[in-house]
Length: 437
Image (cartoon, rainbow, N blue to C red; front, side, top):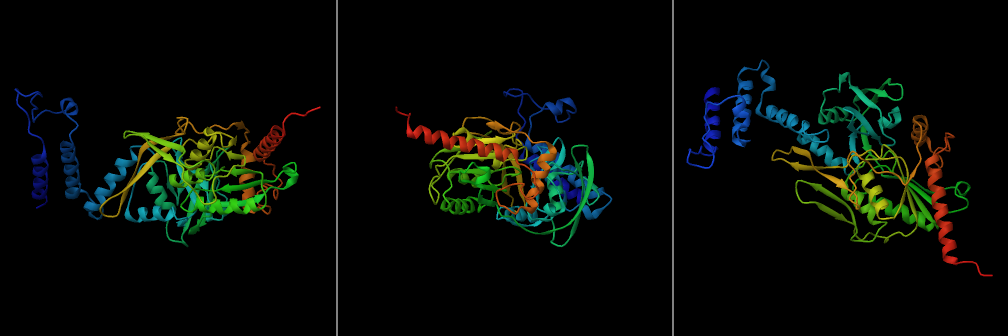
């Protein structure tokens, strides 16, 4: 009966194939018996290749030793996982529950450890750790390379499978074995999954005048870009503006990105409506993204943005756009370089495909992917300094004054404050005109 079903399927595929043309036609006759190199040179036909896939699937269903793994759904999902993972590290297949989890992520609430992962140098790497989450409390850091999840090696694990293992029901334990540079130190962390609620705007405050030469400079950090980020940022800015800030530092360090629309809306708070801030280019015509009118209007005060090697995706879009549009100065180090566009397309059974369809470019047509966004003022931190900075986020007691509790100095913040203070002084002197004797 199984062979009969396959025969029907193969016959249906063959019936859909185009008619083979004769020698009088423009194309040569194809010999049905041709094999090897001749077959490889034949037209890349969807019908021929679907026949190969159907035949392989049916052979597995007939003879594979474990019949618990050979349902049509399992085989189809496995084929889709393999198909998408072979494209690039950012393309993946999502089963219905994974697709639902992704939709929940964009609403700033989901179940898991609170880590964002990506692939760097063929290693599963932690890109960001949301504050207050199990991963953050345990001590995971951006740059940690995940070697094992619950004892299973990640060497040949797809991104989708890794994310699936990191997530799960709240209350369940997960053990990660990571490699931490420098020295390739191996560390093991056991955490309990929790419902993750991630605030995207933290530490909004006016910096102490002792570090700003008496200037009123605001500071805030954007931890990621999700649906409410722009609205939360607008509210934070309104509170800072009531305190008469003259300039602003936006900290995008360790920000792994998020929603493109959220990043564009954040730009909308600082540049005029209908300004192009990013565009995508792929096999389809390029698409441009423009700012829109936001509550509270466009802010005019000087802005400095802090970036580092863990600023990625949406963070790079904001930094690149405001740099190109001469709306902000960037201080720190070149960003991660994750500038590819993943389109998510739902399938009939509730599953979905995430696959790369384009690359991001800044308004000046500078590519982001695998290049990153370079700072205007380069200020590099050592690994130890960056680790202390990240650790200081765990116990901050003076919002905005990074590192004060731990005693760590934030050189990048100091450079940004100096630059803003200089801009304010120059603007004042220019406005007053030359001295007259």
